[in-house]
Image (cartoon, rainbow, N blue to C red; front, side, top):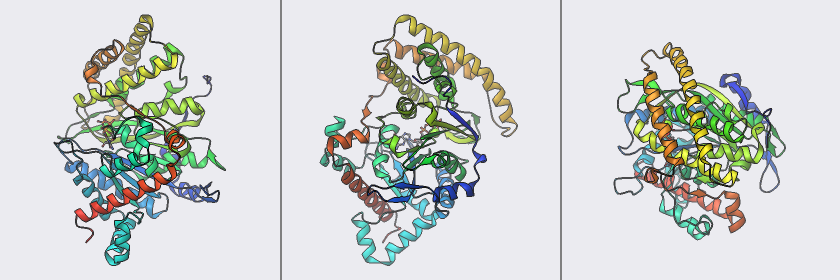
Length: 469
Ligand SMILES: Nc1nc2c(ncn2[C@@H]2O[C@H](COP(=O)(O)OP(=O)(O)OP(=O)(O)O)[C@@H](O)[C@H]2O)c(=O)[nH]1
Ligand SMILES: [Mg+2]
């Protein structure tokens, strides 16, 4: 067990890392490649995207423009080595909806010079276009759909379903992130959500830099860097409505995590995580290939716990991204997320202590959750007052926080009592890619084939939207 002294390192403000120094450090860092040669370290950026049920809205499209425009500067500076947009949107019949990915390649064509030149080259040289058709042109930006039948077929052919014990890919953010691991090549994978309205290139350099800076011959000392911030949420359908966001994290994940640490003396140090659910994080490949992936929104929590179990809190750091303006969902949708996260946490604790929780333990969790969240709500009120000076339209209601806290407490109770199973999605944990490799022994070939499929998928989307003749 790790001691209390080994807390998660808090790196503070992301602006402390000068952009040019981050770029330079990346160029100066080398890793051993699969053939044993020393080669420059590479970074992949993954953007999970799901726009449902109404399809992509104007505000979401504008946000994607901004994200890729900022990334373009990272590409030009040589910091990013590839970008993967992992789509999951489905139409009313449950079939993959590729129109969002067509839109994504159009936006990428407008914003990313390197991608545009790649596409233009294909239009200029027939031989290159033929290669792209076969998936042999490595697009700088790849768009993939997690329900693409061609991907499932590859998994079937390479025996992956025999290891997962499940045919096909399940819905959920975790599924998408799991799929992104073999598709990308980076020594570091950086994940960012697609709904960040004030996205800045320095978010990426800030998250990756501590891993690069601590790189020593073959591996980094810091292996996981997670973002934290204050979320300012813009309502999807009414952009005039702005409020203090992060409700599931503020009112559920943080106080519950604290209760778990207090009650079981497990995961000491994780109670200092400022935003455990942040979808923005950088992680080194040696870690991400060793973790299992729940298919659901529990993925961030799961990654945190597993990284802790593998290497301890001293290899985890957190970085302050200050203000995070994003497009939020309704609280009703968020409740589903809450069930997924609570369900995952108690599965893990049961497994960890090797027995079901006693009545006293359950009661203790509820009491300590209640105390923690009540204390936190007073802090949120202060934070909201400060944020109002920057965002004067922002609404904060302490009464709403208390009302939502009641709902969250209800979710915890229901999960602890084994009730409301219908509110919880089918839970599934994908085995780590390392385990799949051990069981199938053809991970290397599978990775190559998956990349080819992603390149073909990008080619198809470019054709469909008329950018390729
Ligand atoms: N590939 C994929 N992406 C997903 C899936 N579900 C959500 N996403 C994306 O993952 C990111 C985070 O999802 P959100 O639903 O915004 O979750 P959140 O940020 O915790 O919730 P909000 O506070 O409402 O923004 C977004 O970029 C989504 O588009 C999924 O099933 N598959
Ligand atoms: Mg979001």
